[in-house]
Amino acid sequence: MTTEAVVAGAGIAGLTAGLALARRGVKVTVFERSKDPREFGAGIYLKENSLPVLEQLGVLDKVIANGVPLKAARIVDERGEVIVNRRFTEERMITVLRRELHNSLREAAVDAGVELVTDKMVVAAKPEGVLVFADGSQVRADLVIGADGVRSRVRESLGLTKSYRTMEDGATRLLIPRQEEPMGTEYWAGNKRIGVAPCSPDQTYVFMIGPEQDRQLRRLPVDTEYWSTFFPQLGHVFDRITDDAGVHHVHEHVVCKRWVDGRVAMIGDAAHAQPPNLGQGAGLAMVAAWELARTVAESRDVPSALLDWERRVRPAADRVQKLTTLYSHTGYYWPAPLLGARAKFFHFLSVVPVTSQAWEFWWRGGTYAPAPRSNAITGPETD
Image (cartoon, rainbow, N blue to C red; front, side, top):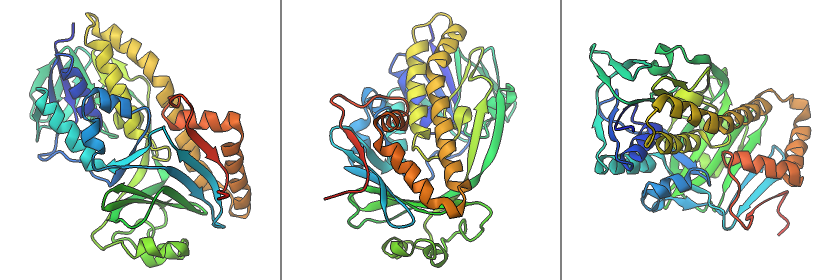
């Protein structure tokens, strides 16, 4: 039986794993390299795969108390046409501030008995269940979890990296004062995209995606005048962007040879970093963390339990990663003279039942819609 676990990284993945294990009676210590662990970014989408995890952990009500349940989400192309329109009734789609999610997980983890050690840099792990720190010290446990991010020291030390690469595009994420934004909307302009969604009673989440080679697109403070040449219809958004708003990150992509080595398991960006097009990076991490805790907590053979966990959980994560990467390629490489064909292609995917249902399934992280099916994807609105 697993009695003690150590976690490298106090992000969303690491805290979810720590909390889930502590709820099962495991003694957990989470090590974080920063002195003040917190989430950078802006908003985050919570869908039907991650929401039940938060509910089981007892933090969902607190997380969404200041969030926004979306009633619809849509994609608008270069012509101003709504090519995908997804309506939500009973199915939940909630946007929240990343810091609200992180703070809720951290507070719940500490309340559950998780020890959080900050300013402690993990540099390696050993398959027999050992974490190694920059100061030369080591700690041993029944279970070691590598949740130390896209450039994971744990993953690298065990030789688990199959590939790591930066993508051709990146995103600036920021928060602006909320006005009347009743739904989530993604606007397209060639190989550039802007998403707008309310995420709290008084704030709206904005992401701005474009080629990394265009320095003006990734400039901070945001060059709103330059962006407005591609999105002239979004003046009401640009007018609310301040000089101190925004963080920018290039999109990164990680594939592991394995997620498991002995008593060590990889989760989150350390295992499957991906571009954020399906809004599932954190969602997949939370599901994997929950399933990891459920699998190993009562096992007397941790290495075997971890292998079983990877066999069950990884296929869905791999498929979502491939689809969200394909979405990036479709946005970045599609020839400019054929943008009309791209719009028709995505509209086709959204209205044909077989393709729309398959896309929805993976958009939810490999989760079926609640019954009765309540998520309707349609073409342009007719009302």
